[in-house]
Image (cartoon, rainbow, N blue to C red):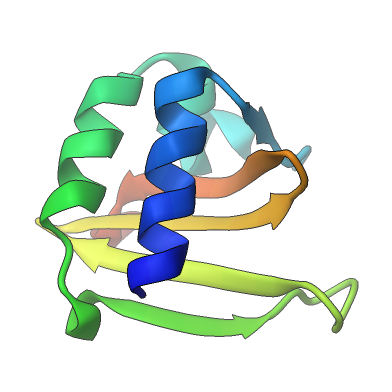
Length: 96
């Protein structure tokens, strides 16, 4: 978690973020729609602990590691596509 957390926080701070295209982006990615700010996501991730984090393989490309943090009733899901972080989901956990 430490390296993923450091890298994603660096990407957020430097504005190196993208959003994965999806049909329900207005519901599942509140960061891309502006319903939550970059600084709010940074703060949640900064406070995340190791047990808040898990990794899995991307459903379309099994070589891509996807990071998931569940923190403060929020679900944050992203992967790295150098030099950026690509956010798949940023939403309240109850929308899963």
